[in-house]
Structure formats: C-alpha cells, structure tokens
Length: 190
Image (tube, rainbow, N blue to C red; front, top):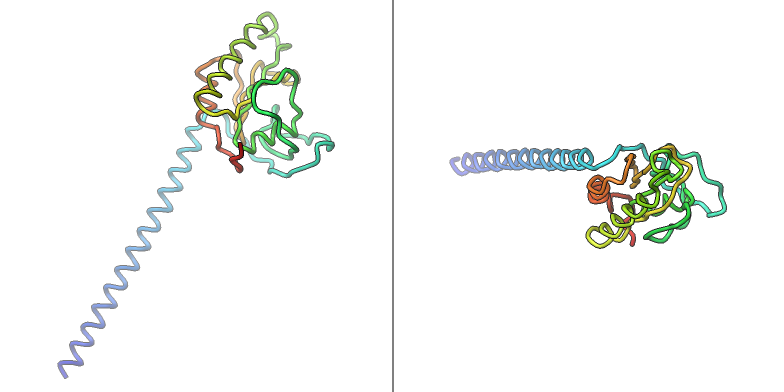
C-alpha cells in the first residue's frame, strides 16, 4: 500500500513539475516575443525620416510606364532593373530608383530648379558629392546621388518606406539618414 501511495505522490510531483515547466516556457516565450516586438518598434521609431506606407514590391518590365507612387520621390512600389550605385548626372526613372531601395540602398536627390537651390546649385552639388563619398567610404556603397527636377522640395533622401526632405545639404542629417536606413529593406543585395 505504501508503494502505491509513494507512486501517486511521485506522479503528482511530476505533474506539478511538468506544469511549472510549461508555465515557465510560456512566460519565457511571451517575454521573448514582447522583447523582440519592442526592439523592432524601437528600431523603427529611431530611424531617420518619415515612415511611409509600403506600396509593395512588384517587379515590372522597364518599358512599363511608372506607377502612381504615394510619394515624390518614391519609397516603394512597382520597379524594374536597379540603377548603378554612385553619382548620376541625369534623373533616374522611378521604376529603377525603387529597385535600389528594395535592395537596401539610399538615394540622395536634389532639385536645382527649386528656388532655394537655384543660386547655389554648383555648391550644393559639391557638398552632396562630398557626403556621397563619405557615405560610400564609411557606411556602405549602396548610395546614389542624382538630380530630381520634378519634386517641389530642394533635397530628398529616400530609403525603403522612408523619406526625408531637406532645405539645404545638411551633412549630419544626410549621414544620419543613411546610417539608420541603409539595408533596412526586404532584400539586402549588393
């Protein structure tokens, strides 16, 4: 009789231990999920620029006319082949810009016809070239500098679903935008 009693006590003890273990695992899982969610929210909140709703990432042929994007310049949406990294001397089509953003890149674009830049366009371009060189040397090579005459802002910084406008080439703001947004995209392709 005592062996039955001790077996029942041992069984109850195992059941209590199992319940405690399961409860502990549930608590640990909740903490981990909550911690990751909090970390992700903090990371998103500390990235430079305005958060923009994604328009998806559909691949389209280059010959397809540009879609109606939700920002100017675009930050996501339909796209074709990527442009080369570095400086460009003519505007980059929207469908190509977006592909570079999807690959984790950042674009610095300027509008020299904007009244804020007209009188000093050559100095602005030189300052932006200097920032581009610093960014590509010290942060990542996936940065583009290009003119963008159709926007109504002097300077725009874009990354995947991120946008920041500047009135002048603020070196610190541009480098901060690049640091916090580089490689923050669906595809991390060189």
